[in-house]
Image 1 (cartoon, rainbow, N blue to C red):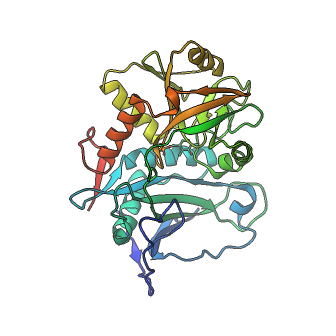
Image 2 (image 1 turned 45 degrees about the horizontal axis):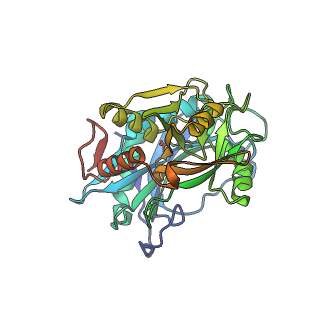
Amino acid sequence: MLNIKVTPTQNKKEKPDQTKLGFGRYFTDHMFLMDYNEGQGWHDARIVPFENLSLSPATMVFHYAQEMFEGMKAYLSPEGKILLFRPDMNAKRLNRTNQRMIIPELPQEDFIDAVKAIVKYDADWIPTKPGTSLYIRPFIIATDPFLGVHPSESYLFAIILSPVGAYYASGINPVRIFVEKHYTRAVRGGTGYAKVGGNYACSLIGQQKAEEMGYAQVLWLDGIEHKYIDEVGAMNVFFVVDGDVLTPSLDEGSILPGVTRDSCIHLLKSWGYKVTERKISLEEIVRANDEGRLDEAFGTGTAAVISPIGELNDDGNKMILNGGKIGPVSQKLYDSLTAIQWGKAEGPEGWSVVVE
Ligand SMILES: *Cc1c(COP(=O)(O)O)cnc(C)c1O
C-alpha cells in the first residue's frame, strides 16, 4: 500500500456545466504527485491542490522529451459505484513504455493505488449525465535540471483528472479519414508502441494537413514502405471484410497496444467472429472495397470507444464505407463496451474494478 500524504485545497472550484464539458478542458481540485530519485526510488506520494508546477527551464523533459503518459477513465455506475476499466492493462503498458524511455519501473500496485486514491478523493467531480466520465491522465516527466543528453536521474509521476462530456452527444457520426502517404507517425525500432508525447508531436503536421482538407483524422501507414496500415489518428483500426474482422498485428512495434483494441478482439471472438491480427496492406483494403467486400472500418480508443470510418480518401479515391453510416459490428461493440464500462452489463472477469 502506498502511504499517501493529503493536503486539501483551500478553495474548491465551481464545477463546470455537464452539458459543455468537451474533452480535457476542466481539471479537478487535486492531483496526485510522487517523486523519484536514484537514492530513494519512488517516494513522497501525495495528493495536493491542482496547481502549476514549478520547474527549472533546464528541466530535461522540455528539451529531450523523456516522458510518458497514460489515458483511462472512471465511470459512475447506475448504483453510484465508481468503476475503472481494466486498469491492470494501463499499469502494464505504462511499464512497457517506461522501459523504452529508460524511465524507472513503477510497481503495478502502486500505480493502481494512486489512481484509485486520487479518483476517490475528487469523486465529487465525476459527472453524472449519461455518457460523461472522469478522464484520468497519469504521466511521468524527466526532471533533472541538466542539458546533457542522458537519461534523467530524477522523475515526477503525476495524475490529473478531467471531467469529460459524452463523446457522441448527438449520435455516433462516422468520420472522414485521409490516407497519409508522406508523413510517418512511427517506425520499426522507434517508439510507436510506447505512449509518449513525441509520437503525437510528430503526427500533428499530418493531422493539420488532413483537417485543412476537411478530414477528421489521418490513416497512418508503416514508416518504411507506406504500404501497410498502422493506426487511425490516435486510435487502433479494425476492418470488417467478408464478415471477418482484421486488425494490424502489434509485431512491428509501431502500433500502440490499445486497451480498447484488446477488449474488442476479446468480445468479437466471444461472439464467434473470426478475428485476424496481421499485416494489412492499404492495397488489400482498397481492393476489398472495389469488390464490395469491405463491410465496415472503425477506430478504437478510450476517448471515443468506437469511431466508425465513413470515408477513406486514398489519393483522391474516396471510398464510402457502409453508405457513410455506422455498421452493425461497430454498433454492437460500442453498445457492449459502454454497457460494461458504465456498469450496466457484466463484462469478463476482472474488467470492471470498483474504487472503494
Ligand atoms: C492511447 C492510444 C490508443 C488507444 O489506446 P486505448 O488504451 O484503447 O485508449 C491508440 N493509439 C495511440 C497512438 C494511442 O496513444
